[in-house]
Amino acid sequence: MSDQVKYLLSEKDMPTHWYNLAADFPTPMAPPLHPGTGKPITGADLAAIFPPALIEQEVSTKREIDIPGPVLDIYRLWRPSPLMRARRLEKALQTPAKIYFKYEGVSPTGSHKPNTAVPQAYYNKSAGIHKLSTETGAGQWGSSLAFAGSLFGIEVVVFMVRVSFNQKPYRRAMMEAFGASVHASPSKETDSGRAILANSPDSPGSLGIAISEAVEVAAKDPRTNYALGSVLNHVLLHQSIIGLEAMKQMEHAGDEPDILIGCTGGGSNFAGLVFPYLGRQLRGGRKVHVIAVEPTACPSLTRGKFAYDFGDTAHLTPLVKMHTLGSTFVPPGFHAGGLRYHGMAPMVSHAAHLGLIDAVNRQQISCFEAGLLFGKAEGILPAPEATHAVRVAIDEAIKCREEGVGKTILFNLSGHGHFDMQAYMDFHDGKLQDRTYDEKELAMALAGLPSVGA
Ligand SMILES: *Cc1c(COP(=O)(O)O)cnc(C)c1O
Image (cartoon, rainbow, N blue to C red; front, side, top):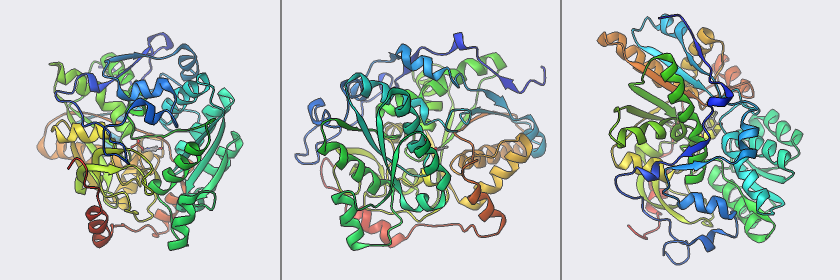
């Protein structure tokens, strides 16, 4: 074989549909429930905050869904994204394993998030919506929706988790550069934000709180809709372009992955890479070992309960069955802000429940060590979130060395860390601490799970 490292797909080979794992699940997912009645929700319930096309995708069990032409045109600004073989990392680890990664950091905002921001803005524009409200953790999602909104002429308002608002001023600047307005959450702009501030004026915020604020703004204004950057079925659907491209690129490389790895906050970049492979496996194809990696400080898949819970802190969203730490749980403020969510995508949770995927958690210091090792070998500094996937890819490659087996590993490098250099500086200065959640707070949050559909 050659010593090729980059597997580029030509624009004409870019997938023209998304893939929906709901078509291949052996048993269907539990339905979302109305927060008031506890009965399954209807499309009409969602119409106050989502456009019809996205509601249709949310409940669809169709296997392939066409990507609209105007969305494909914008995807071509950075897609197909490269798939690379990390040969220098392999050498540094002296592993017989082959390590490949799909690199989503080439997008306009440096992560996988525009893959769904663009179609969400497109479908909302088509439905006559003027304004989108949303939340953001580290700022990756907010800047992606701000970018997409600017392309389609939609106003964007972002509630940014306060701890990240303070840590990542350049993310906020990027959102504003694309024309969005940004509030630190909890904010005084909404009832939900004011209620939190009344009890804890120094709240670091959480995605659950920021979602409540954004949903509240959308629900109160008929011309404003809400957009979510992860968790929902339609978001995971849009991200499937990652895995569909990767499958073609691995074919060009003449390899097939034995192990697939992604980091999980709400589960969207992980699902984007692995769901097309899981679908193939469920249809009788090659079996893959799939590993989701989450932070030890916010371990929904590894320590949470698989139960109905709210997606937000103020309980404005439908109840969905997912792995959850409880909607009132506020994770400690560690650097991978995009992984600080109390729940997991219902589709990822269902896949875990069916035994289709494994989940592990890792502490942030060991993740930054892995990120730096990768960066020195390959020249890309991963986003703090993505270092979790890098950590476990390296762990698996070391295991291969110890066992003397040469497996093929493919992980998703969900984004670069160029806006997260404060985190790398803290690491260098020895200021980074491994954070663990408060057991008592977790027990309390879990005790407060709603008792519906249990
Ligand atoms: C948002 C984000 C994540 C976490 O979100 P998922 O929905 O779990 O993918 C991971 N990596 C990066 C770079 C992000 O921006």
